[in-house]
Structure formats: structure tokens, C-alpha cells
Image (cartoon, rainbow, N blue to C red; front, side, top):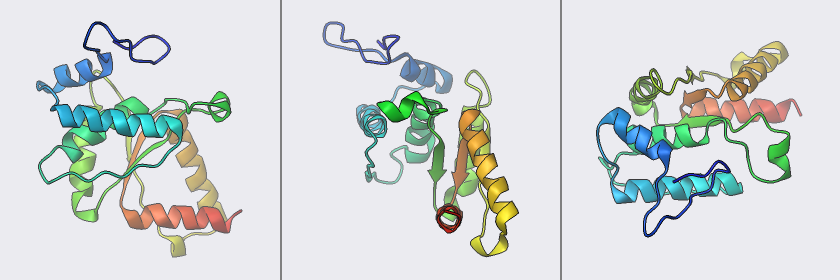
Length: 170
């Protein structure tokens, strides 16, 4: 089970994470072993401040299982160490190919519409269409999404444009 300090507590030969139980109950299925392991690996890497990339075959549950479960686990969680002491929590951004954006948004909205409620936002942004006021407004919206524990869905283009505009305003 998960202790109040956020650590898995081993009981005999199994452990239980209530977040996973809630997720399984809400959707009416049990996670495959590899889905659970991958989610825990990605969560652990995020808490340690490491980036991580994994590959899964089509139909293995990236969009419908891993993405929503990981978003639930990470949104609002504070990073470990001194950075976490002054943080509003993690900002969760799901970046998907354009062909999957509508589906991903739909899955996230259905996941976080009841029981566990979170706003699911869409980031649409072009680097060339902005001035200083628009860049500041975008920065405020992203910061408020982090504080509100919202989830942002986007495609690679707007994600990269946001980073470039942020660098331009350093």
C-alpha cells in the first residue's frame, strides 16, 4: 500500500497503491503487469528529476492507460529535494502526434471528469503569432494550470514554440 509519505510499503510479497486500485475500479479493468511496471518506472524517474523515454507497441495502452494513470500520479506532486519545497507541484503536459490529439483529449477528459476531477486544457500556440503581452499571458495560463493541477494536452509544434518564446524572453 502507499504510506502517507508517498512510499510503497511492502506487505508480505505484494504491495498495493490505492491510486492504481482507484484507476482500475473506475475503468473496470486490471492493469497488465507491464503497464503497471512502466508507469511506476516513469513516475520514479519523474520524481528523481530524470527524463525517460520508452517504446510500446500499438494497442498496449499508451493513450488509454499509461497517459491518464501517469497524469493522475504526477499532477500536483511536488518534486523531491530542495526544488520541491518551493514548488506548486508538477505541471503535466501530454505531447502527442497531431493525429492523436483529439483522442488523447477525449480520454483525459473522460478520465478526469468524475471521481478524480482535473481540468484538461489544450495548448495551441504559434511562435510567430505572439508579442510580449501574449507571451506573458501564456506564461500565466501555464502557471495557473500547474497550481490548479490541470493537465495540458498538445502536439510537438506548440510545445516547441512555447519553449522558444520562453527562451526569447529570458
